[in-house]
Image (cartoon, rainbow, N blue to C red; front, side):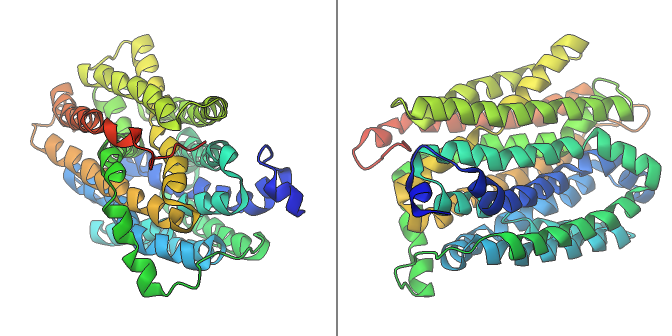
Amino acid sequence: MSEAKQSDPQRVTIAITLLALGPFGFGYFLSYFFRAVNAVVAPDLVKEMGLKPDELGLLTAAYLGAFAIFQLPLGILLDRYGPRRVQSGLLTVAAGGALLFALSTNAMALTVARALIGLGFAGGLMAGFKAVVIWVPPPRRALANALVMSAGAIGLLVSTAPMEVAIQAYGWRNVFFVLSGITMLAAITVFVFVPERGVATNGERLGRQIAELGRIFRDRAFWALAPVLATTAGSHIAIQTLWAGHWFRDVAGLGRMDAAGMLFLMAFAFFVGILLSGAIADWFVRRGTSVLTVMFGFLAIFLASQVGIVLGFTERYAMAVTWIAFGLSGHVSVLAYPWFSTHFGAELSGRAHTAINLLLFACAFFIQYAIGAIISNFVPIAGGGYGVEAYQMALGVFLGVQMAALLWYLLNISVFLKPRSVDAR
């Protein structure tokens, strides 16, 4: 790859996409697949092991908890050793977790396995974003990030109706045996095929790299943005990767295949939304508009969709429009990542990204578990599910939290008008 191509601010070349970003995209494909697969496999786990909503929420959220805990060490490792070596090692851990999940016979073993899978995929998106910072010029990073994220959206698609078909044909345990092998193959692919490129650390010692996290956590702009990013993205992850499937079955009264079909439709909307938002952000940013302005436009759609969900729109057309809008706009936090990488600089980009990711996935972990805990306080309806009131309470609480976080951002918006806060242009 010539130096000219590397420095051209208007080109994200095919070589970069295939060699430097492609394997990370595949890793993120698997990351999102495993993150969302419990929305489909949950009925089998509940039937086989008698799980209650709070147990299912904790089991599924274990992925998110381990994912969140590892974010700060991950940022340091990415900035120090680069995404190639870090991601290949983590994917090996994820393969082991998938194997343990296939062999598990009780809730505790499943929870530990999910945690290992979450730990192994902790670098799924951040490694890709770090590769973007290394290989792609700043004006095109929003688009390049969207390309990496689109692979995750495809993973979300495959985790819905196609996964349901595979489970029905081969059983969930056999499917997870195969997934373990595929994940190990992904680890080998990243290590063997991704080109190496030096990561600039300015000779910093590890202790100083850790200490510089304080610079991120003392930044006022970080704390103005972090709550709204963490609560909105956390709610999206918690709902789409588990509770949406239960909503379709309990509130809308859909069967397993119909519910999986709706999840597939949401996942396709997620895929379209990622590419659409990346292209729209790319267009506006190159013409002088802040990437954060574009992000908050999508955020308005996301919050409006949740109002319809909380109100319990179950008429076929209204339900489809509401959940499609939810899937289309739920990824909006990704548009802030190029802003963070510019605001803190390339050398701190990995730590800045993973600092916000820590808060985001900690929120997702808490919300996914708390929704199940709230629902468990209601009396089950006939057939073992829960009524619309349970979901209105659980989802309504976290819609209110997101609105409060948005208000906090608006109260602190003056931080972004100061000269130090440079938009991702």
